[in-house]
Every structure is written in C-alpha cells, then in structure tokens.
Image (cartoon, rainbow, N blue to C red):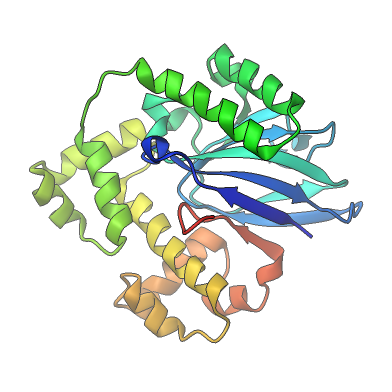
Length: 274
C-alpha cells in the first residue's frame, strides 16, 4: 500500500512548483513489491526521510536509490521496487524550473535519475540534510520555500516564449501547436528547438504527456467512464490515435489499464490541493 499527501506551494512559486508531497511507500513492508510510475511531465526531488530506500533500474540492474535524488522527466513508464517501507518528502517541479531553479538543461536529466550531489548546486544538498532533521511537513515546506525564494530572488525577471508556451499547453492540453506558435509569433521550428533545449523533449511529446495526464485524472476520479468521451474532451478526435498515445505513456491499452490500476501510480502535474 502506498499513501501520498500533496501540498500547494506559495502563489509566487506556483509557476515553477507543482506541489510538495509526502509519501509512505510499501507501508506493509512487503519483501518484494513493485509499482509502475506513469510519467506526469514533471521532475521530482526526493528526500528519503529514513535509512530505507527503493530500487530503480540502472545499467547494472536494480540499484538502491541515493538519500536525495532528482528524478527527471520521463516519457514512458518506469518501475520502482521495494523490499521495505520507504518514507519520503518531495518537491515536484514543473519543467520551467529546469533552467530557472535547478540550473539544468532538459537533456541533463531526461529519462533518468541522479544523486543530487552529482547534478545540483550544493545548496540543495544542505537543504535536504535539514529536511531530514525536521519533524513536521509544515516545517519542511517552510524551509523549502525559504530556499526556493532565495534562489528566485537572484534571477532577473524575464519572460520567454518557452514559459508562455508551456502555460498555454497546460491550460488547454487540447491546443494545436500551430496555434501556439501563431499566438507567440514564432515559427514551429523555433518552438521545437527551444523545448528540446530547455526541456529535452519536443512540444509534441509534452502535449502528449498533458493530454494523457488529463485522461488519467478522469480515470482516477471515476470508475464508470466512457473512454471515447473522455478521449474527445482531452483533445483526441481519433480513437486509434488516443489508444496509441495512451500505450506509449502507460505501457497498456486504456481498457487494460482500467482493469489493473492498483499496479500503477500516477501523480498529476496539477490538481486542486488542500
């Protein structure tokens, strides 16, 4: 069993932070447990609060995760394995945070994960040490936001078409990329180049993540779904296109996924939080 609780960031941080969350994974401490994670278009900084860890696939098979790790953006599902109960505190970053807060290029952490000591500024390591020492989620969120505000205060206020494009796509997730380019007065080639530079993937792939994310949200909120209607409202006007995209993101057909939801975890990029 896995328990997740999510918390909203301060309004000024919302352009970069989707949420904070706490999690108790494999709370029954089963010796062999696994979960398939469905990508959500975000990155996550995970802090293990105790000396217990999960295992992720690597070049040498399953590897125990570091104390503090950054999980990059994925475009396909991946498995997490547990042999004990694991408790975490995490920050879920929107892709806009890559260059502004994390100081990374999208390709640096695409479809992978890393020990933060190898990839982020030492200030994040110090933050994670402090997060582990605190007792309450409220305290952890407070010092996290203090750290993030300090980082943002060093950034000049800028507006760029990558940020505007991601906001437009998230607001609708059904938009045509031609319309997005036209609204921003740039070519589709410019838009694609900027996405690959900042996020590591094309705007088309990002839009696919957002659309399937909308479908996943609908699936989680109701069991008596008409998948054809859901797909249509999430921007799919062709059932074959919807099924193909869904399988690319989840590894299953929509019907197969509905029959086996407990084996998966989908943590949305955004939703109404307490």
